[in-house]
Length: 380
Image (tube, rainbow, N blue to C red; front, side, top):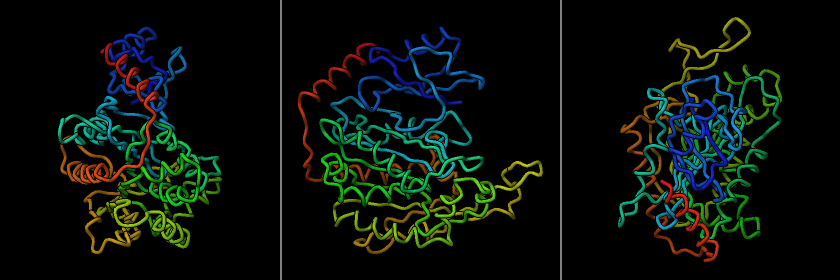
């Protein structure tokens, strides 16, 4: 089980954190430790074998397994930090678990592989801050009345933390399934908002990489049976094939929000394998079917690529992945699928950094950030 630990003092290293947790009887293998998004504390992720862990037993630190909001998985030094990469999961997903390797659950490519895959060409040091964004989108037994607009509003507010920095870095967004529709809902609203942080955010988001995003809707029939008559059923039905009018309107507004040539890049990955679907287990619950004859293609190639960058002819930005809908964002250590995605992300990062920058910086705040990092690094 992977947990997140927040409110960690800047002076602590992994050894000090592990020692502090052991004082409360928690044996955690600390996998990452990075400066939090606010810059005044650190955040860590780690594996705990005892699934009965009660996070409430730890004082001063905040431990959770939900990963809601922004979690920084890796952060280079301020001198090396040149770009931000943020991943958002899909319907019923998890900010960490959705991207975790199925065969090796302790391995999560965004945290364990990507930092060393996006490096500065001159220094060969990691230059990307890697983050995930989590939100509650459970399907079964949900009491939430969330819709695309409310989910996008909270995501937008979280993203603005990236604009509240001395120097706003270029941003690449990685979005799976419903997460992509949330990104599309946020992107067009930015240029209409005259506030400084919205303008800075709009200019900063350069690359978007979609994975199995239902631009024309998806097969939600197995999910509606789980939702039954719960308040979240309208959200699920809004992304169905049969309700493609909503997704088409979102696609049109998204295209307008992309700007012109050179303002942004979008890549679409689509699944080639059918997925196991949910079925009733006969005891009032649900399970994933094991019968391949019942498997379904959840998001078609046409739906996953239908946004179509209006200035790019051909299919250069459309990429197939021989996986099912869930597994297409779960990469094995050293796997060929990760390498394909890394090449795409590295190319986007290089071109993003090659753009003329109009971002402003505040030297005083930037020096403060460097001071905090030096304090943290000196204890390592």
